[in-house]
Length: 380
Picture 1 (cartoon, rainbow, N blue to C red):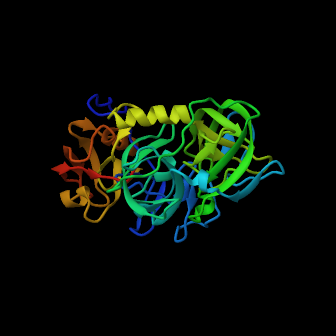
Picture 2 (cartoon, helix red, strand yellow):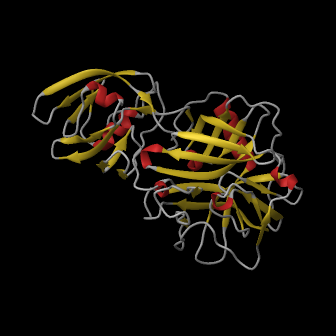
Picture 3 (cartoon, one colour):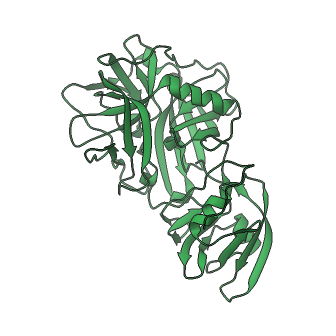
């Protein structure tokens, strides 16, 4: 039976199937390692950049709820065109580059400047799994390190903070709702090239729901209330602006289909901004997570005896406590652990820096325990 949720903390557990290539850790699930065989296990990943462990042109698929199978970003149709973004379209827009250390990969996306001191709005999936984030101001070329203020994985929204930024131009957010038939332009770091492009089209529907998934159809994620457009939203555009016919931003580019007529999807900017406001206000609940997740530093698999450690990250909290491959974790702070999912759910109730008691059975059958200070994991 899964452990009861811990009321004092809200972050849900996270699981990624695959392997950490550079660390040599193979497992069915990872907790505090965020393992994945390629960056494409991140739902809606913007664009793997050069040096990624997957081809640079591979983008996860999207399946609109209830119909069809879609191969990913990058669809085009005769109704759309792509050109370099204008100077006006670049105001307050940034290119985001991330390193996913535990996936041995890199990725790229887009964001929008919310404040002159460097708060950035983007999609959660652009930074999911990132161990470092670099942001470039499109108009000036200035580059900053960035940290995660908070995320809302359920609604695919994240807020970043640039280090030592000031005097930045902010994005031109609209106060008007999108309307069907409205002319729009999607702008973003298409293909992860570091150069903003613009794709024109029209709004074909509003209040749409889709099911986003990875390239294998796994890790499905429901997104609702979206703007649908025939503009050719591409890989790398995620987190970028969808400009309306008044030249202001009505949505945040988030997803697109391929294999047929182009269908791009954007989160209405009012929705994204409201979530960003809650993140900035310090809300921490079932959907909004402040900062970074707790990090134990183990990869796990379900074995005959339960939650079996497949590997421990070098220098991580688990290794420092003496936990090694083959050990079976049986409890965290008195909460029984019977499976890898149990461990993920339980660790999701803690924050970096929390001190927890971990009990495990060694591969030799002995019981051991230690007080462990949880580290800070990659962005979730």
